[in-house]
Length: 494
Image 1 (cartoon, one colour):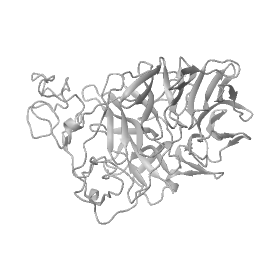
Image 2: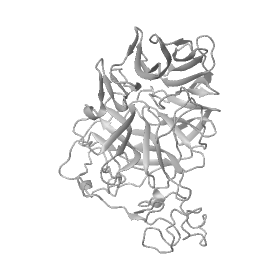
Image 3: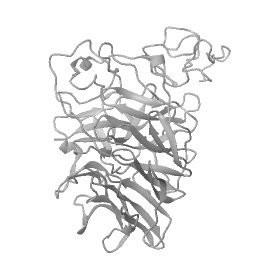
Image 4: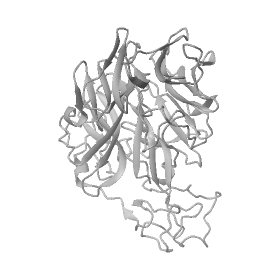
């Protein structure tokens, strides 16, 4: 994975840091697995024996904002093992645990320890007499509980290195009993929704292509406010969620093999997660990127860039002239180079910090008013980001020879780059796509071969794999039962 955590947030310039969430990661709760196949219903993945690999990180998820202090919403719910086949939001009840108040159940409002409330005490309609979602149903506010139906095309799902498909409609498929005779290559697939959630967006993908980090959200049944959860998709193994908290975790990056996650919480703690445990790297800040092995983390604390190492701890980084207002946004695969932006008296400047911690501002075209570096190739020889030319942004790439404005429609910005620096991902004039080598920008819709995208509106691309062959991003489903809520997707490029 590129430790080049590209574009995890679209831009850090011009925004304040709304620390909207807070909590400490306690555990990732695994989704239930398909019978006889160890793969949970609805896991979308490549089929036909595709070799999955992946790279760095990405842009904000769930329609979250981006800013100097971080970017997207995250928090969540989900003891999937305790409620296999169920979809709901409140904590499950059990013998000896907190119990729902029977005087409140059936009043039509979602009260503590209720996962649904359909204004009655009947069972068999999806919401039982104790106001718990019944197995096989999904319940949403102001709508009758509906049966989780299996779509016929799910029977065409392939099981070669992946699990069952999930249709764009959002209805999760159950796993067929056995692998069908006919399989097709999958080049575009939406990622399964976490149980009870209606929207998801990714922020990062691990270098080996097995793990995607992001967030899912839903409307709170009682207040109709958004409830978000940080999630991790194991491609071929389902979706995992963090326990739902008042203040949640935001995951921003993931290392090469998916064993280390970084991010921040609503209390402003920069966090690193490994082996199910969280570690606070700094207060009043955010961890934004991690090296391939997870031993080096880049981010910022109190609006100053930092580089953290497992052996030596946290080191604050300064600008070329001692500037302290700075933000580290990406790190090379070996952790030796850090890039981001430094704020000086005359604006914001894309910056590279070298192994000796010296800083240098990256060159920009005449007339540029601001710039930021968002990602770099594994060895750091190519850096990509965004430059502001007047009121418009343009994607830019830096090398030792200078800079190059990337061709294509504007406004544009570069979000990430593969390990070798041969493929850059980003958005141009509102369309996600890629720059291959010195070629012009090509929209993702034109680069994904063999995919049926008529019912999809591609919104964003967040991250790419180390070999540039796997991309994750956000789209909207526009077909039958269309929803304007974002859905996470994975796409496979030749």
